[in-house]
Picture 1: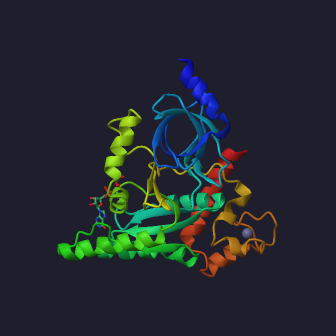
Picture 2 (picture 1 turned 120 degrees about the horizontal axis):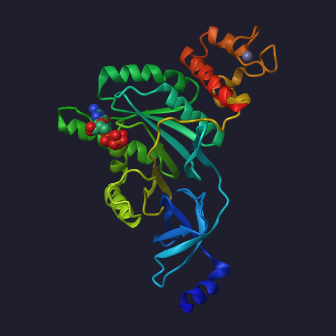
Picture 3 (picture 1 turned 60 degrees about the vertical axis):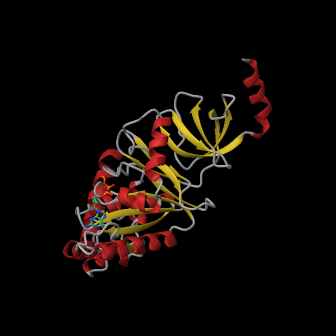
Length: 323
Ligand SMILES: Nc1nc2c(ncn2[C@@H]2O[C@H](COP(=O)(O)OP(=O)(O)OP(=O)(O)O)[C@@H](O)[C@H]2O)c(=O)[nH]1
Ligand SMILES: [Zn+2]
């Protein structure tokens, strides 16, 4: 009994630093710099650790495949959502957020806007991926709805990850094109993918990480959650050199923004931002005041009506519960 403890003590000064690649409840899968995976538990009751975190840990068994978390390295950033009752963290230390939408099902612009605001506030670059552009008419409508986002500076990529094109060679050429496009764009750093159900998120992950399904099954067994194979956030390396990673996270619904300060909301909306400071009243809400530069831009067509509606709804939502 004393041996592992003595061994652990001897390691103290140089605790291993690992990367959290999956987490569920009080179980975490930590990857060592050599690529080994260790099942770790936090010491306390509650743990703030999320996928993407760098953690210090010590082994708790002789095989070194189980351990205890000893500490959390400082984070560069953390992406999360917050409703009135709780906070849900997606992942930490991200280089970009990829928001997946599709021509079908019709995406919620409010959900898209919310994710973009959360990313702006967290200082994380965001890009939009429109899938299913093989569906011609729905794609045209989706493109139209995304036009304001392009105009305010967001990159919008278009793909047909799994086209329904009857000519199978054409469909597979479209998949190849999507893979090449994304491999290039996501070639460095950690990319978190968020997207509503049915948009093709599983298709995307499987295209870029062919071994994803097998890895997920393995991790789910390790985390004792057998059947629920897709409900955890999971970090996948995209290359052997481990320079680029894709993080698949569930839970895009009800993207609460209670952590955003009401007075700062407009700052995180790139189409509203350039007009701030131009209003007659310094505490202008940009909803009804005379001499409002934001509303003037709206009237000139420089801000899309849908965006101002989203701003107004969010303002009301944040104002309702904030005081
Ligand atoms: N037409 C068309 N269909 C696609 C495309 N990509 C994916 N699909 C289809 O869209 C459906 C949803 O794809 P999934 O990858 O399962 O979507 P998901 O977002 O993981 O969905 P959930 O499992 O509900 O979260 C499937 O029937 C796919 O075959 C595409 O480029 N074009
Ligand atoms: Zn104003």
